[in-house]
Amino acid sequence: MKLVTYRTSVEEKARLGVVTNDLILDARALGVAAGQSMPESMLALIDTGRPGVTALGKLVVEAGDEPPIHTSTPLSNAIICAPIQRPRKNIWGIGLNYVEHVEESARSLDTAKELPTKPVLFTKPPTAVIGQGEPILHNSKMTQNLDWEVELAVIMGSGGKHISEEHAMDHVFGYSVMIDVSARDNRRAGQWIFSKGQDSYAPFGPCIVTADDIQDPHNLNLWLTKNGEEKQRSNTKHMLFNIPALIADISTGMTMEGGDIIATGTPSGVGAGRTPQEWMWPGDTIVAGVEGIGTLRHPIVDATPE
Image 1: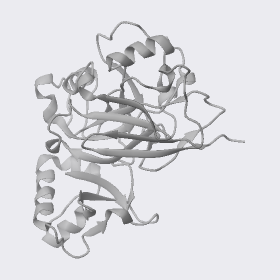
Image 2 (image 1 turned 90 degrees about the vertical axis):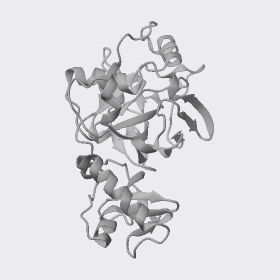
Image 3 (image 1 turned 45 degrees about the vertical axis):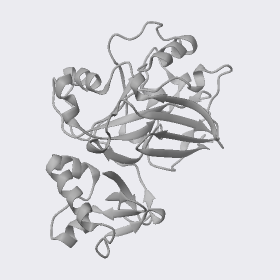
Image 4 (image 1 turned 60 degrees about the vertical axis):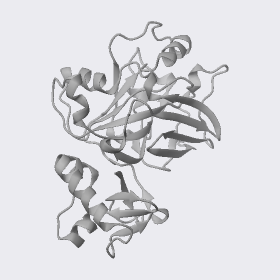
């Protein structure tokens, strides 16, 4: 299923929906029509586990091409929010997870030339998340080197500690798109949180596709354009550490929970690695996509305080 968090007006509370063709079927409304209780939010659905996802999928199938009255909204009339507007915890970011990006980062950002022997971890706070179409904020007093990174996002369905690689994929709820916005000139003695975690630095969405609908997450094309010009294009098969390895590694030291998000790293083509280097500026538009999931489009706006 392709799941979204959406509103039909700015004032309305965000709701959980399922995209089918050009419609959004409202999860709670479908449940009411069928005399069942359905979750009203993405996190609530994740908390129900596989039985909840299966039950919602059954209602969608039963709705067919003529869903019950008051259960659907034209996709074109909806405001699409971040699938999880406020994650419960920081987003797990993975650095240097594509071989060619390791090379360009060593050349342009003074990172190590050698391939990492373990995943490189950092985090983005929940306040960094923005949804489809919301502006990426450019504060010129904070950065002159605002960069882009397209990534596959993994959303955990069930958590645990010491999760084995063998069983790691059983813990995945679904997949989404994330842009890892990075202020390259805000790295502090190797600490990335301020470079990666400022407000609006985690565009996320436009949906979550459940794991059963992605045949192979390690063979998905991903790309990014700036002002219509392609900057990144690769495939998730080129990850240095695959999804099971990332889940197993993170869970060795920290308990993972349902709703946790892993941004799995970016391929080459970032602005810092180009000659001459390129950055995002107010007036630019960034579009990023992952095959089988969707695309994100975001304007860059001036947010410099006076």
